[in-house]
Image 1 (cartoon, rainbow, N blue to C red):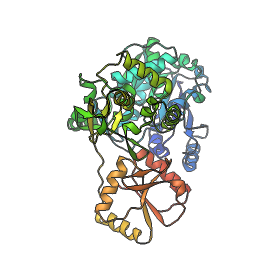
Image 2 (cartoon, rainbow, N blue to C red; image 1 turned 120 degrees about the vertical axis):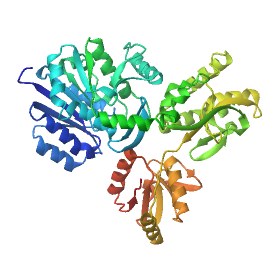
Image 3 (tube, one colour; image 1 turned 90 degrees about the vertical axis):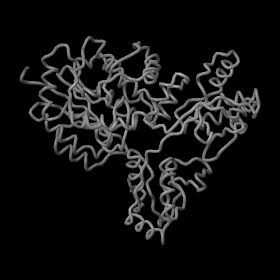
Image 4 (cartoon, one colour; image 1 turned 90 degrees about the horizontal axis):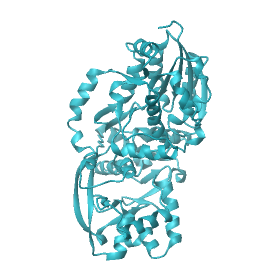
Length: 505
């Protein structure tokens, strides 16, 4: 291995609170010469952290980007700004969240900081740094090194979603591929030259929408596909063995209820995009194929419940195109599914010509609220009437949220409520669970607050307000949010000088 090795580290720092741990790993590279590029997201930066980075690495190059393309968009933009001929190795890093409660995917259980630790320990751990660099410098066949347990093959629904994006790029991929889940790896710099020539910049990516399989998700896979197509192989570092053995034991108790049981059931087919948005990472308490009358199925929209006859797709079938266009526009802002008159017309024609696979059942929850298949149900309602029975996939998701309010917490909230109003921040499944627990403890809740309010929304019998509508100062908030959203909301509350918010596990 040659003595003078030139390394480039490209780090996207979305979660600023991860910097301390990332810095500790970068210290393991201190015996080598490396340049550091740090990108961060506009509006999410912490100036103290950026100053600390500048103090530790005076030659660092900072780039600020809009919230586009997760960590992948900034990486592609940064690639356009560097001369890869100068470097031997590139480390592609990002601030993987360190506070995720639980996630089961790729047949693996991840708790808290597991994913972060696996990614970083493999390529920047004290015992592994030299090994990684030696492999990339001395072995001509190895193009990329990453955590062995995160070099995986995608399940079929994600392969299909990746293929759709690849087709738009006119990039052909096979029926299977291997990629690094988490997209932190070390790679030969010359391997990235072909990817650099794709000339993809940050403007090619849409604003981040959580839950949608986006261009960025596809590209993190296509990076790896391209490296393998160039004739290189991947090398996996087997890190954190004891932790992984423990998680394997723990995963036995959750894998049977993982949502992927639905994909394995040969009786049904589920739209790839819908599964990714609604079921990915969730747990299923029970499901069945059931017969339900069309008049018993409801649709939830903006906090209210409607019969199928009251829904915009049914109104379209009766000739109200204007209402349906308005619905499509509003729906696209709320959900990652794109609906249009053209798409609905194709569905109608497909149904008339019997081109629709009957295994794609409408999906409802345990209360017969439609989750997927509203348009199909409206077509059936128009043809057969409200008494007609249809087969549906009825699914009840398991709530994994656990809220433990001790006596001190309850006393704090009760005392605060004497002279102040308490709102729950978040009007979703977390909000429902918090409301139940707080009301059991006789803590009065004024209503719900959300960042982006829909008009005249009610939830669980309480008014939902936008944060901009809260004008009084004698208010407090209970944060009913996942860890990722909680950080963003805390930043918003601090900016608006709301001093009282409560966050409980």
